[in-house]
Image 1 (cartoon, rainbow, N blue to C red):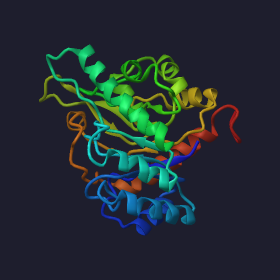
Image 2 (cartoon, helix red, strand yellow; image 1 turned 45 degrees about the vertical axis):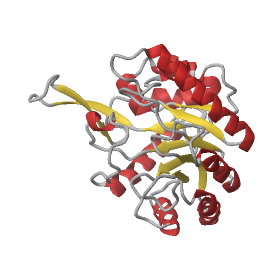
Image 3 (cartoon, rainbow, N blue to C red; image 1 turned 30 degrees about the horizontal axis):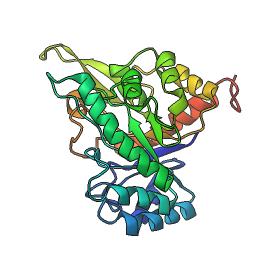
Image 4 (cartoon, rainbow, N blue to C red; image 1 turned 90 degrees about the vertical axis):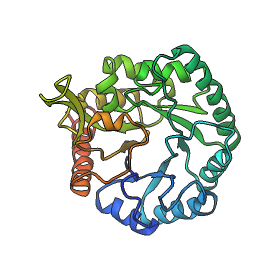
Length: 290
């Protein structure tokens, strides 16, 4: 499994400096955010993404995934097909789209039906350009807030065109049994989001226990079990680290939250990569494992 770094909090770095920084932090590759304010963005992706990915390859980094803006949910929107074409031209095999939201008081199944109609359009773009559409588990008021909800969206689609992107931190907050949840998405499993989460006591709030994101290994995720399940599946896809630390879940649930660098970003991002490598090496069947 490759350990890659999501670039959401490194938007101030130019393409060469981003690659150098990701290497220095101990990662195998980049999950590149193609978003406004980043060096590669929706307006220049066709021109800039191929060259960026080529440069990162020459630096020794892979780019197995591009991450679109959180509102990238309409396959017919201007520029949508251009994002897929840019990934295809750059050799990026996956594109993570945005999130469909559930409106309080709304009809859940109507929302799912509407999202699946849009997903049909994305699947056609995936088939045309050879770039898999990925949808991420995201806790809170998003469709697909755990593996069961994700399968409401993607079941029946060709896994070559639509991939599952479970996120272990979000699953810890809106999840189900680890093995059962990952088994649900196994046929579509493409990429795994790496976050850890826990509940922090804040007596002044109601309820007094509130979720937040922490360093990998310091929260509620059962990493030995989850990584062992993935290893047992034969999963070889990317593990993408999101470097969300000490963010209150109330903020994270607002999908378009400001992409402001969290405290100790580089120190903790380096620690996360090293922690994951040790955890993978200790798994039964791994080189150096039991």
